Image (cartoon, rainbow, N blue to C red; front, side, top):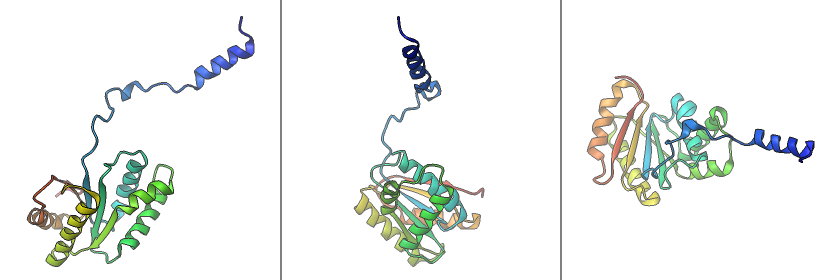
Length: 181
């Protein structure tokens, strides 16, 4: 016959075991995400600082980003890639919902770049396209693009037209429009 202490230990183990969540059944990730570059237009704005980068960090923290992945921020604000990276680290530390781990941040930030750009400046748009080609070579993203348009509604038509004109011949392209238009 088990002693009281042994029964308590057994009961404690039962209570402390993590029960499986039945709501997660069938939600397992069945495939690896395609390699891609996430291009954030309006990257210096509040949405990027409060929501987008903290969410990207949380995905990196959970190992849910593609292995071959890069981020290209672009906005009218004149800043360097290093300045953008510092601003995004501050944003993740302030607004992130998961524990900040330097090694996770270092991996994400090493694939993060910034190009300042006015939305109707052909030379700046060419610099963005050149940087995207460069990121394809460096990170093996195969021309796949996810464009996030966190810009004023009046800039959306111009950006969509320019994205179409400069689109790589390989890979897929997806657009996320943040604001109603």
